[in-house]
Structures are given as C-alpha cells and as structure tokens.
Image 1 (cartoon, rainbow, N blue to C red):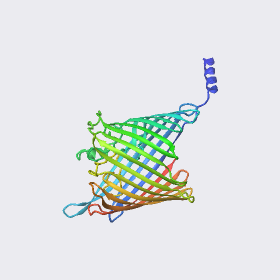
Image 2: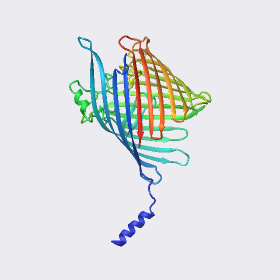
Image 3: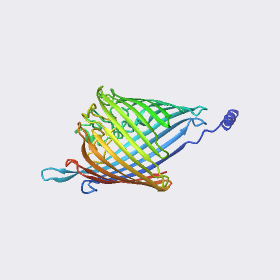
Image 4: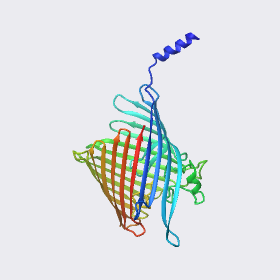
Length: 407
C-alpha cells in the first residue's frame, strides 16, 4: 500500500501541470428612466449577478470549457394613461430570472502556416454577418476553418431549451413571445419559460483581402420551426442569404456593405441593406461614421416585408418598432480623451416605407459615456431623445445608468 502511494505521488510530480482554472464574477446594476413629457414616467431597474469559469483541458490550452451563470432581478414601473377619467395608472412588476448564459466546449487545432480549425459546442452567443438578423444565445455547435485566404463556417443550433425571458424571438405576427393574457402574470412570476423551438442552420464563406485589401463574404441562414415537448409546434420557416463587402477606401477611411434577401415559406422576398463609412483621425482615438439602413416593408417595388429572427428595434420610440418597413440615415462620432474615458454622440433621421412611398417618421439623438473608474469598476451612461413625426408616436426621452463591479 505504501509503495502504491509513493508511486502515485511520483507520477503526479512528474506529470506536467495543467494551466490554472480561471474564475470570477461581476455585479451589474442598471437603471433606466424614460417618458414622453416627464423623463421619469417609466422606470426599469435591473440587478444582475454573474459568475464565470474558464477551465483548460490540456497543457497547450487548445481545449477548454467556459461557463457563465447569471441571476437577474428586474423591477419595472410602467405608467399608462387611459380610462373614463383619463387617469394615470402604474403597472409594477418584479421578477427573478436565473439562467445559464454560457456553457461552451472549445477546441482549436492550429497549423504551422497560421491556419486553424475551430470547433465549439454548447450554449453560446452567435451572430449572423449582418448583425441584424440573429444575435442571441443558442444551443448548438460551430465548426470553422480559418486560413489566410479563406474562412468557412457551419453552425447548427436549437432554440427550444433557451429561457424565453432572456431571448426575443419574433413570430409570424412580429411579436417576441407567445403568451396569452391569462398566462401573462404566471409567465412573469416563473423563473424559466422555454422559448419557441427552431432549428437554426448557418453556412458562411468569406475571402479576406480578396482584392485590393477588400473582404467578400457570403452567408446562408435558415430557421425552421419544429416540435418541442415544452411548446406547441412552430409552423414558421425563414431563409436568409447575405452578401457582404468591407475594407479600406483610403489609409484611414473604411466602408462596410451588406445586403440580405429573405423569404418566409418561399413566399415573397424581403430585403435588408446596410452601408457605413468610418473615418479614423489620428488624435484622441476618434472615429467618425456615416451609416444607412433599409428594411423593406409590405410592398416596396419587387420586395415584400423583411423580418429578422431576433427582435431588433430600429429607434428609441416608446413602441420599439421592429426592423421592417424602415429607412434610417445616421452619423456617430466617438473619442477617447483619456484611456479610461469613452465618449460618443449620434443622430438619426427615420423614414417609414411600409408601401411603395417613403414618409418622414422622425429623428433621434443619443449620447454615450463609459468610465473605467477602477480596474474592476465601470460606469456607463446613455441619454437619448426621440422626436416622432406622427401624433400616435409621441416623443420619448430617457437616461440609462449602468454600474458594473468585477470580482
């Protein structure tokens, strides 16, 4: 017995130790106030506690597991005006949402020529190339091949096990969850509600520096409604094809362009097109950008309605309109006067195009400030003002203050 113990101890001493497991967490408190005349009309308070862990599985650190757990408590006060006496009524809700935000196995096989094969599986965030269609957590697997001249990727996922209270998936009516009025209070009080079940499939191919330092990309995304033991079957399928180009125009001037064609059940074709130009001056880490975004409406020439998969509002309107039947032209300027300070300000002109004609729909301005007060303490402040053109879409102004403490 003693000899066995000595042998085991010797083997452990001779074995190369694995890199240390890294872990930590952060606490975030976010307060948002907004309203039409009174900016304190509506109030939303979010407190989120997050714990994370990163564990290597070999000495080369080419295999690892990452996990992140969170608990979010949200308290909201929404004031509505109505009734016979046109009185103000406040609706208050408070609920707790625990979730697994990240549980990911990652494996990288690097080659001597600088290329690499990457495989990931589990729950993690995934984004389409446009950044506007699919941007959320999902359970799935990703296989990527990266070389100096080509990048190819395949993703397959399933949404039916996600917490519906943490993701916003649009249905065929443009709503981001299916809950009847009778079930709504129970839904708010529950900790976990399963999301609508879809199979998600994505295939991408890009060519970095294909010509004149320009990058060209192609991507196909499919979202197929399926059965689930927890939810009714979703009979709603969506398909997207995206072409993108980006690169430098001059030494400090860059552009990014993408256009996406979408069809629902192979009936009609919607379009989403984005174009941006960004200039980087030499001083203060500044950037100046001009951008435009178009999402087709119900009938825009040859195009029908565009609708993404993840809920995505186009403006700061109180009604948070989805990205469809809209045109947005904007600009954004940012600087870093100090290493710990980031400042940005932007403005947008908004137009509605539900049919063939384009109508002015309002404008908005917003400003961002991020302060890295200490290594473990960050404060961010966002102020916005939205001016609607239609009487049914009142002005909205608000302030969001977010404090994050890491440990």
